[in-house]
Length: 293
Length: 238
Image (cartoon, rainbow over all chains, first blue to last red; front, side, top):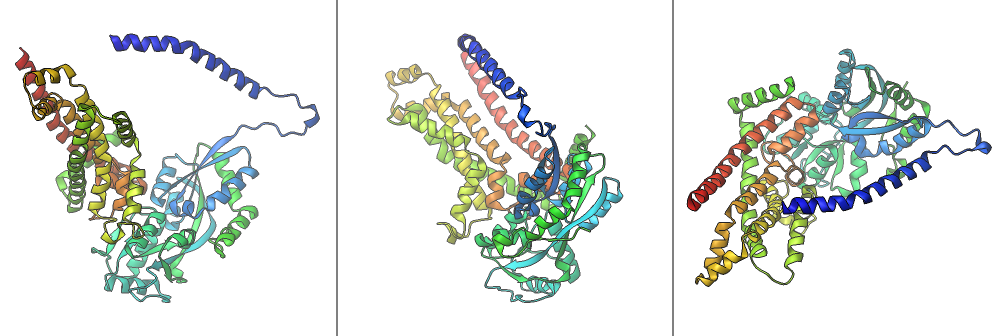
């Protein structure tokens, strides 16, 4: 009872304060929302309703920082849209798309993307860009694979020597790429040296650096984090390490116009140019190669 | 709704199948939870008792700090432990990062303040007059402390249950310092995050059901103990 009376006294005192605050807020809001007469500035653009476009993409794309360059440019070109990026694994990104919780997906697992479209969840898959994967590991290279051009042979050597290897283990595009290379070697990778961690690219690179292990990484994320890692690129350039990105508009997306606008924009000359130069300033080399038709 | 029923069915099937991987995950989960709760009790309970039962300079500050520590996000604790255990960190040479021990350390730091804070509150709520009375009847300091602890025991048990709950449901810290390595440091919560990321929401939910089921069993024991205490008290007062 005592608490109750105390509570209600506080409440009684709080009511006028709350009322005053609400009225003040309303006044401020009205003052802001009042369309001010702008006779001199008749050419000012009509205020447009801004809608949200949700993009489901992968952690590796997000970790590279590419969205930081693309999203503001898209929003400048299309001020009626605001972009939210959900960065998850490719598997989850496609699942989010299937549930129509995203309007667009931008991922890198071509076969799965084609299935996604074939099953009617997406409208069309458009090539956007590609980057490549690199096999990184401790600078001392205990497995002695530096300079190899055959990724599968390098994987075999790591497995034969049971050198620590961190796997994404999360069904992401990167993990699928890794599995396809293990398939090519004909070795089932398992054992205490093979660490399957189910985490994003950035986490996996940090872990590999900490435990002095090898891992397969997309070049973009590796370059973006290189300075904080004790990892060097040992194998690159194998065709198997090619990593194409596609954009797909989700069928009946909740913001279909926004989704189509984004997909059309990212394959436009303007966006392709941003992709072509992204990373050159910071890393001395581009992270992605645009390849939209 | 069908999704949830399916998750429960999957959970039952997984438990019945009892794959070695699942049992390993469950084993690591409760190993970490029990070790960190135990150390949380060892560190937190005496501190909570002192904070609750005695008056000393800086007590309020200490209580405020404990309450703040209870609110520190687990990922921050995970980050700090990770930096300390990192190869570049002060304890790097121990090679503890991405081990079960690292997870237990981080979770202990999460459990201890919760156990200390709630123990302190439980002990402080024991009527001071009761303690005065005990002392006037000739109880020694130690005896008085035992009596206080006995009076506060239901609250102390709740404190331990809260500490255990925080570590068994925690994900941020164990993911950072354990790394979710399959067969080594994967626990139920990090497996849930992983399955959700893969898009297998059904399996993620099923793992959640398993976690809740086992935790429910353990909490059932605690509740039974608490109720036994209440019944005993009612009986004694009648």
